[in-house]
Amino acid sequence: MIRGPLANPTFRAQFSGHETFPLRHLWLKKAYDQVAAAKGGAAPKALFTDPEAIVTFGVGKNMVGSIRHWALTCGILEEDGDVFRTTALGDYLFADDSGVDPFLEAPTTLWLLHWMMAGTPDRSTTWFYVFNHLTVQTFDHEAIAAPLRDYREQQNARLKNKIRASDATIKRDVECFLRSYVTTRQRKFSDDLFEPALVPLGLIRAVSSKSYQFRRGAKPTLPDGIFLYAFHDFWMRHAPDQQTLSVEALTFEPGSPGRVFKLDEDALVERLARIEESSAGVYLWSDTAGVRNVARRFQSPDPMNFLASAYETAKQRSAA
Image (cartoon, rainbow, N blue to C red; front, side, top):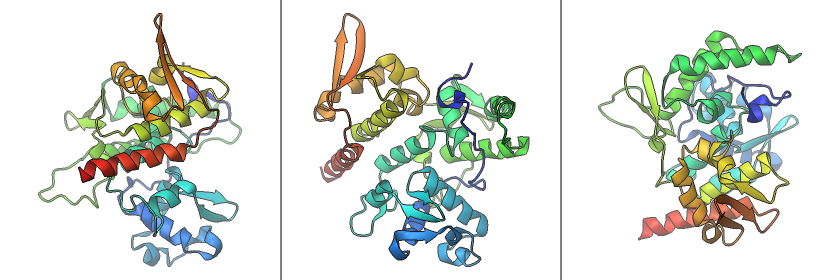
């Protein structure tokens, strides 16, 4: 039985929007700049659909649609009636005068974008499903597509507004997902700008031409600040009224940092054991009589502070 956000009777899955293109390094900056430059910081939605959009963004029509999709999925842009606006996250990453990583050069940003895609199912249902509900270690395309087809049928049995996602649509969605994380062909010369942005995270590896494997365990390039940002986000979605959260929930619940980042329990506990220090006292770790959990001192910490600590740590390491 599926649980978590996908079990919500009002949730509506989405298996399209990316036009089969994984996120690339320069796309979010392109989307951000065009919306930020609009009068009053509000760009009409026609920005991405007008015929001149292919000139504005310097890519083909389908890629323009993909840029829009990923900018919304990653929380860089938001819809506001008939216009798009930049978000606080978009401003933090991409603003001309103060953006911390406008060209996605830091692993810190890639981990953050992975969280935005796989931590919630709204615009990237397949991403969420694979990282949170696929329990096998090794899998192929059909191991993802088959349960998604079943899930579509279950949803359509209860939704009045049916999900119009054909088997072919789900197939293409799964293909796009796999290409987002795995290099699919050998190239004599590598161009990072054209490689899907999340491949360097190494979360999934190809073990043959048709099968893939999760890489579970510690993630040395995942900063504590990004972990804390995800930790806070999950807590607010999963149990906003609770004052404590168990190791089990953080490891196994759909949408948890343990699931999304593929951290095993040991790797997760290692981070939680230092969470009082890494969060500057916002959270407290407790391991008493076999009961392990995290308590929060403050009801509503500012998650942007966690991002700031992540990028400050990354800057210090690069300068060392």
